[in-house]
Image 1 (cartoon, one colour):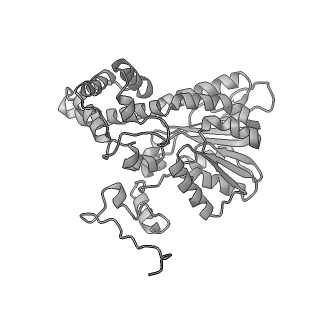
Image 2 (spheres, helix red, strand yellow):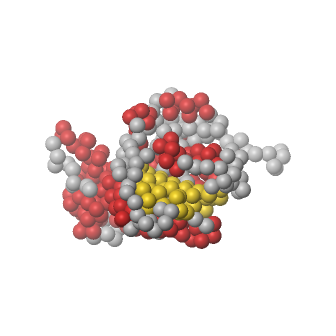
Image 3 (cartoon, helix red, strand yellow):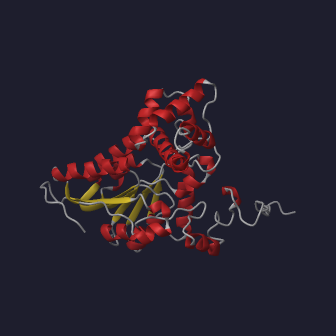
Length: 360
């Protein structure tokens, strides 16, 4: 047998007529090979496993007004959906830099974009946190346009090994970069009751923060540390057992979403990183440069709104969005993960004098 011949691997077998677990969805995980399956899943209003459907794409492009020859930054590469559309606008002239802290997903996206013909001459992918944008700008010069999509990629949410979803069994990890830092389960082994309750309120506006924190810490004291996604979901369910049966199911669902969000924000230092990015953003834009930021929960949106308003008053931005732009009803119907999205934008001033906010 030829030693160089690739070994044939049998596909994952599953019970029933449809795959249920993430790893069983072999067709969805190979979009290039099974395009018809991908189209069918998207038509049903779902996101195929291992993919991410970009949100507010046209609204973002309409504002950024990307021109061939410009230099831009996609501060959050992810699956590369926004990246690809911005590259199309450049028409092979100029350069796009893209940042991501997830080594696994950024490598896959880079290979996918390379296969589409976007080589190093037009696209450079950097394994950097977007708060380190200034380090890149020192090498490249300031940018004509910047995009930051602050949402967690569907590839991360759907993969049970990453621990981002309460719906599937997996290790309670929640790190954007699994090679550094502590996992969420490790964080729960050391956090105090007061700190955990405060985290749930500050990071997710959780109304049952006290009850959930007491349940998690109580389990830890009994030697039942929360180490998996299902164990955390069960802790939330137990904490909310006092609610009337008619409202309990929906309350548990929402509290699970908020609890996972609060933990993810905490272990990835998301607020601190976003604040640092926003402080550096105007100085990384060329005069007249445009920045668009897509947020997915109130804490992020408050930080962006506050930063844009402050720098506008100080004259660093000549215009900012007076109101957040929301995805259309049609987009939300086609992609449920778009419902919480808010788009805000700012334009770098040509000089140091301020001017009134504008809308597009």
